Length: 389
Ligand code: APR
Ligand code: PHB
Image (cartoon, rainbow, N blue to C red; front, top):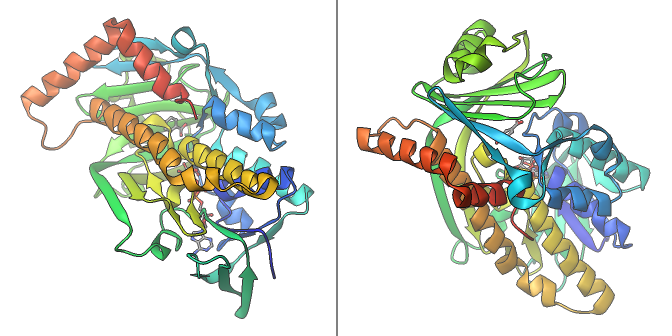
């Protein structure tokens, strides 16, 4: 089989790229190792930057997002019994949109199917050949049948555990990583959110986050030990701990209920450089990971897709390699700013096992500065709603 762009990974990065390319008549094939149901079964964050909203509009997939997405003009930040609001719209003129990333992926699958997009599921043993030549190709298997896909370019959208990053030679690749000494225990419950906006809480017992998917589907997280397992926590134990970490007036109005999903996610900052090797381009989690504190995972994948899509368009429409040649540098420039914001917000809001009394004083001083200083709130708001592409 032959295509113009071979895309490894049928998550949001791969699907968004495929749909955008399709909108310009550029052919692609998506190779996904799982089933569609498995991909859609993943519970992910739910805060979208305007840049991603615009890309979904450009891809012709934003109808449900506009109908069901909830605009949030700000967020609440609490520390101890104190709480203040950072107003995104006042500082930046733009809100964020709360809409499950699983729904983004669902909308993209629906659009690809409607457009007759080529997606192969249950793909195994993907190998990238001759990425640093003018004629790369992939080999892989489906149901034990060996297959080959010849292409002009390969987009590695296969996430942190994919094969694409490994295709870049070790003597070329530079990796940067920070592993956090805690995880996030998250639950989904069919209950009304405790507040109409998110609450990020720094409490002496650890971080907590109150989020949502819609007016009757809430998403809550508490910082937990890396040795914890979801089954160690009953629903009741979770609710009691969450109530201890958010301000009392919020805890008093928290509506609890049975969890319909419960999982623990580790926190990691990770970047690989470069994000290109010959005709292989890494996108999204294949190239970088952020702690979920700043909700930057999908939103940074979106800017990667934007740069790569426009670089490929220039190649096919104007016979120019300018965009592709600038891809890695441009994508990384924004990736590192998202890494910094996610690291900063994680450092500010979590309790670390080795924190000294001085460290705790620094957290409170930073929170009080953020609470009182317009420039500090402006900086946080600009990063949270998304820096320019
Ligand atoms: N062959 C084919 N597919 C693969 C392979 C492989 N060897 N390895 C991984 N995949 C698939 C996975 O099954 C997954 O569906 O690649 C996809 C990668 O999707 P994500 O991990 O969601 O990464 P990405 O699309 O970059 O999404 C970025 O979106 O879901 C949010 O916050 C989340 O940070 C994440 C962001
Ligand atoms: C979520 O709703 O899952 C969510 C929201 C904001 C974050 C992280 C996760 O920073």
